[in-house]
Length: 478
Image (cartoon, rainbow, N blue to C red; front, side, top):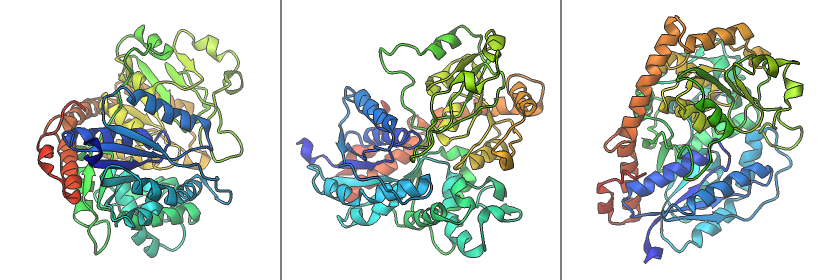
C-alpha cells in the first residue's frame, strides 16, 4: 500500500536561493532509493512577499505531471513577526512560529517518516521534530567552505573579542587559504541578532543525523576533509557530510516557449555574450555596456522583502544609453531565466553576484565568471572562485563603498574573460571547462554526488528499520 511507503519530509525555506536546490535534491533521493521512499514537502506560507508563493505554486504545477511520488502540505499561515531586526532575524522568528504546525503535520502523515530534512535556517524546529523521535538532517544550499566557517563560528565567537569584521589579518578556515576578515559573510561581520542566530545554527547543526551540503566533493576536497577530520569543531567531530550537488532543475519545461532573452541569444555567435545578472536578490545600477544585462530596480522600502523591483530604465540608465548600445547588447529590466541564458552556447562569460546557485549553474555549463559579490556569503564564494577553483577573473570590489566597482575595472575583467590575452582570463576559461566535465561526472552513475545520495538514502531507510535492498542501485533517470 502507498501509505506504507516511508517518506522523506523536506522543510524548506521557501525563497529562490534555498527551495529549488533542496527540492531537486529530494527528487534525486527518491531516485537513489529505487522507489523505496516517497517525498513530502512542508510549505510555509511566505505571505510577506507575493512572488514567493507564486514561485511555490509554479513548482507544484511543474511537478504535478512528473509521475513521482511527491506530496505538498501547506502549513497554516502565521502572523508575521513585528519585532525583528534584519532579514535573517526576521526569517528565523518566522520559522520559529511554525514549530507547532510542523510537529502536527509530521504527526498526521499517513506514511511512516524515514527522515526529516530541514534548511539550516530552520534549526529552531529541531526540538519539535525530535519530540517525535525522528532523525533530522540539515541541508545547506552553500559551499563546504561556508559550512566549515559556520561550524568554526562558536570557537571564533569565544576567541575573538568584538566584531569579527574588525579582526586584523585573516580567518583560518580549515582546508581554505587564509580568508581576509573583510570577506566574511554579512551576518558574521558584526555582533547583533543576526550574528547570534548564526552562532545558534552552528551549535544546533552539530546535533543533526547528517549534513547535506550543496557542493561537489571534487570542488572542495581539502575543506570536506577538514570537516570530516574534526578540525572545524575543536574536540568534536561533525555529523557525516553528504556532498550532493549540483541538483539543477530542467532549463526549460516541456512545451515552454523560449524567453525573449534566449531568442536574442540565438542570433549571437558562440561564446560572444557576457551576462551581467545579480540573481533573485540583486540590485545593480552601474551604467556599463554589456551584451546581456539583467537590470533590476531597488529593493522596495518597508517590509521584510530583500527582493528587487523591476527596473525603470529611464531612471537608472543615462539618457541615450539604450540607443547607443542597441547594436551591442540587450538590457532586460525584469526577471530573466538565468539558467536558460547561462546554458546558451552564445554566453561566454558571467559577471555574477556569486550566489552559490548561480556559481554552480555557471560551472555546470563551463562558463567563466567575474565576481561582483554583494552580501551574505557571496564575498566568500568570490574568494573561493578566484583563489581556489580558478574559474573566475578577479575584480576589485570596494566593500567600503557599497561594493562599488569602477567601470574601467569591470571592462578589464570582461575583456579578460571573453578571450583577451591575459593569463588570468585564459586560466579561468580552462578551469571552467574542467569544472563542467567534473560536475557532470559527479552526478553520473558511480560519481561522487551519486554515491553520496545512494549512501544517504540507504542510511535513511536503515534508520527507519526498512529493507534497504532497494537502494543497492540508484536510478539514473533523476
